[in-house]
Length: 316
Ligand SMILES: Nc1ncnc2c1ncn2[C@@H]1O[C@H](COP(=O)(O)OP(=O)(O)OP(=O)(O)O)[C@@H](O)[C@H]1O
Ligand SMILES: [Mg+2]
Image 1 (cartoon, rainbow, N blue to C red):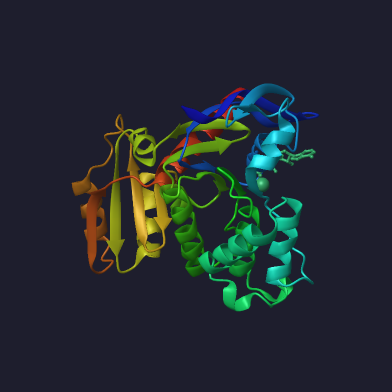
Image 2 (image 1 turned 90 degrees about the horizontal axis):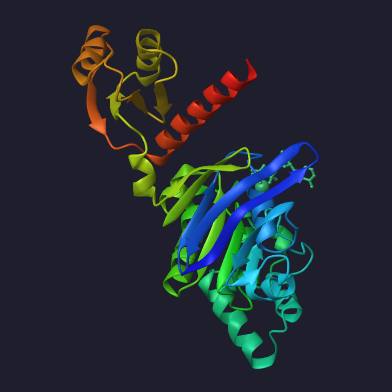
């Protein structure tokens, strides 16, 4: 049974349709990723699910509780780490977490045990007497997470929890999320990072207040018709310019040192052999061209392109 059930949820601010008719169903114990660019409506969606903000219309249930009618019960039973989580900079790590324990009525022996567990779990125990302001970005996020977990919530909402955090700390943060997942916690997070989306059990691509596509990462990847060619070569930037000139701007993208070329099912303009010939003729040093599985980023970019083309059709 779905632990989070969302039906045609909308939030409009004047003319801005921040959330514009979202339907989603999330199974208990899942790690769900709401994936989208700045301004897509991720925070607004999470705030409605955490019963902090009322919807304009539509409904949602979180663990069987209605987000408007049972708002107080939801607030008591979920963990929520907002995009700008409220840590007290002049309080120490321990004082911050004690503060949240008091708010949630976690007291006495239970409080002591839970704080010890969370600080150990998040590897913050060594820093328990350090002021929150003096922590690194990654450590601050881990402390925010520890505070959001103080009352052992069954469902955890995390709004871009690793935004701006370095890759090593992000991996560390995910190790904690997996541990929570193993313990059965349902995790609903938002992210703009595609590598994080790959780690989720279910994702929804979110754009301009609407879900463009959702499912497991594997299901979502099947959406992309056609194939992708991946090019590795010694001069990737030169190869990129050459390929864009010959094949078109839109279908050639650079990912680090790899080039991805999108070949849509109906598009017979170029094949693996033709692309290989183009690179060979350009004398760009050693190269390799092969077919590859699409990444979530490929799917997202392709969806955004479709959507932007549709919007342009509407405008003109
Ligand atoms: N309180 C508000 N009043 C008016 N407009 C708002 C309000 N909150 C959000 N918006 C607008 O709604 C849209 C969605 O905002 P939201 O913060 O939900 O996006 P987001 O996906 O969380 O973006 P980001 O990645 O930047 O955090 C934006 O256009 C934003 O300007
Ligand atoms: Mg946001």
